[in-house]
Image (tube, rainbow, N blue to C red; front, top):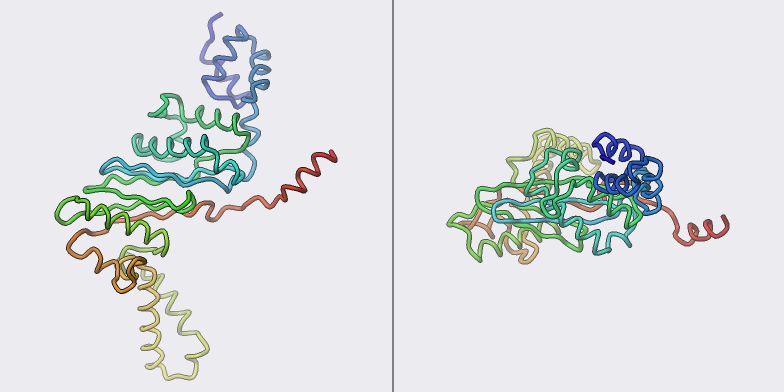
Length: 295
C-alpha cells in the first residue's frame, strides 16, 4: 500500500511522533492508522508530546566554533541526571553545530530544518531523544556569530557558556587565541553586562543615579557634594558592569582593556547561565517514589 504524506502527517499530529518514525510505523502496519499508532506507543515514541508540558529547567549549554562562525545553545531537560547523560550532551553539541551551519531565525524554524550532522529533520531528532530518555527536551535559546576575524568560546561544567567575537589587530595568532579564550573564562566568572561604557543606555545610568541620590548616608549633605559623591559611585558601578574596565581574573593588577591593548579588540559577547529565569522542579525524589509505591 502507498503511504501518502497526508497519512504520515495525520499520524504525526495524532501521536506526536517524528516524521520518519510515523512513516515507518505506517509501512509496518500496512497503512492501518490505529495499528501504526499502537506500534508507536509500544516503542515509546508516541508519548513524546505528552512530556512537553513539564518543566524543563535543567540541561546543558553547548557551543560550536568553526573559524569565523560560532554558535551557543541552551538545551533544557527536566533533571540533572539526564543533563549528565552522554546522549543528551551529544544532542546539545549537535544542535550547536546545526545553529552554526544553518543560521535559523528561531527555535521553531530550526525544528523544521534538516540536521547537518545526521541528515534528519531536527524535530524528529529531538523527539527521538525524548522517547529514549523519557523527559521533556527543549531548545530554549541560541546565539550565532559570524565574525570578521574569529570567534572564541568557553563552557564551564555545561552550566555557564560564553561566545565571544574578537578582532585581532595584527591577524590571528596563538597568542591572540589564548587571550580570547582567557577573556571568555573571565566573562564566565565576572559576568559583565556590556563591552564598554559606550554601550550602557542612558536610562540605566539615570536609574542608578536616582537610587544613589536617595540613599540615607547622603541625605544630610549639600546638593553639590551629593552630586560629586554619586558621580564617583556611578563611575565605580559602571566599571564593574563593563568588560573592558573589569580587573582580569587571572591578573587583578590589569584591566581587560590593558590585557588586550595592541593585540585585539572585543566586538561583542554573549553569556548564558543554564536555567536562568526558569522555574525549577521542586519535587522531592524520595516523596515521588513513595507516592508511586503507594499508588
